[in-house]
Image 1 (spheres, rainbow, N blue to C red):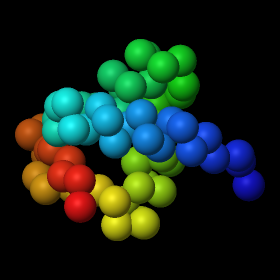
Image 2 (cartoon, one colour):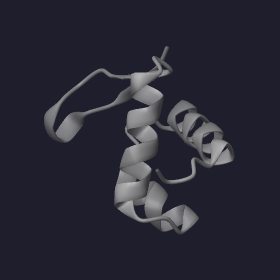
Image 3 (tube, rainbow, N blue to C red):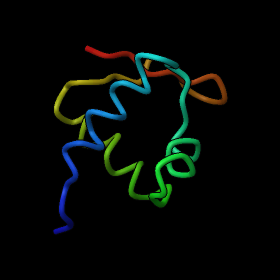
Image 4 (tube, rainbow, N blue to C red):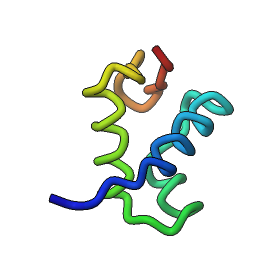
Length: 65
């Protein structure tokens, strides 16, 4: 199993607070991670109940729970 960067999880939460429509690709480019890694972090946050996807399709957005 890959190591989880807890600091990155917090950064993602801060980014979602600033822009609920932030994308995995945007964060990957901004912080030097792969898009797949950022998706994994989003999944961790979703599975732990910290964020929720509130829209689907092209206009998806995230909500902090």
